[in-house]
Image (cartoon, rainbow, N blue to C red; front, side, top):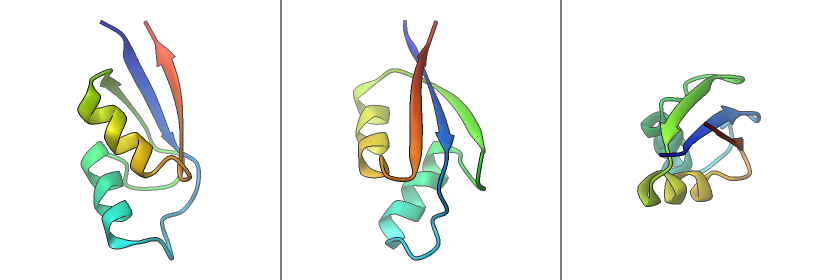
Length: 60
């Protein structure tokens, strides 16, 4: 199964509380944090919510 490498590239300061909660749920706490998650629809939806704060790469 494919995996997604999610990197927080922008600060969450000034963003909505929902976006902050989504970043925390993904496991991102600070700028330049990186997490690798399974490529599932739930994760894709979370990434879509904060797409302006993160970058996503597919890894094998």
